[in-house]
Image (cartoon, rainbow over all chains, first blue to last red; front, side, top):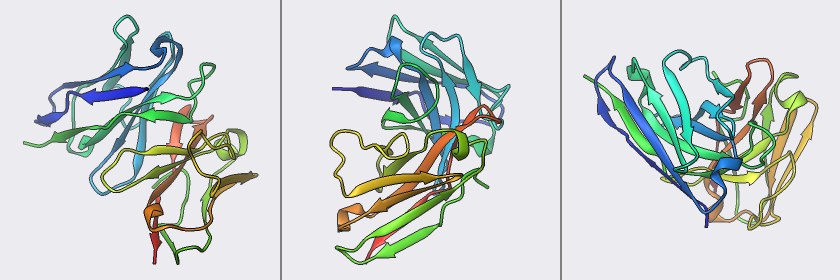
Length: 122
Length: 110
């Protein structure tokens, strides 16, 4: 069955960096675009970034553009989110999610990881 | 402030029907497919409806979706206490070149 396992979260000081990972299994990872979505404590979902199946196309929310980088290693079925210059407002649970079809980077988001909590605090 | 607008909360009695609206614009809902997600307390979101009105396998037909112009609607019939959750609409915004979600609607089954 499809499984997405998010990891890499933790407590980090403002201005520092963190890299999240998402290990995928149970489907042909290299055929699907992958997304990151976050949810601040007690708040709604916020879309963060998407990467095409081959890594050639990447799109970001304005709130993270220039600070976050999405990438993937199809040989290891793993998605990454490099987060630099972290701010208190980046505190959230971060979910990876797979696109439903192979032909586009657009939603819907079919399968979701369990999420990993990132806390930015001094 | 979310790009897509949803009511913060809705409620209905068990067995009844409820609808949740999602309002956007021509750059998002008006020209892209809408999907709906259910987030049970303490859990990750789950895809409920995709491409405006399609259900993934395993989603009961009590859940339905529709879209008209720049608005979309999620319908849930035969409400059960297990349906209590937060519901989010989502789509792509062709102007922002980004995914967008509604602010979420908390469903209470009284």
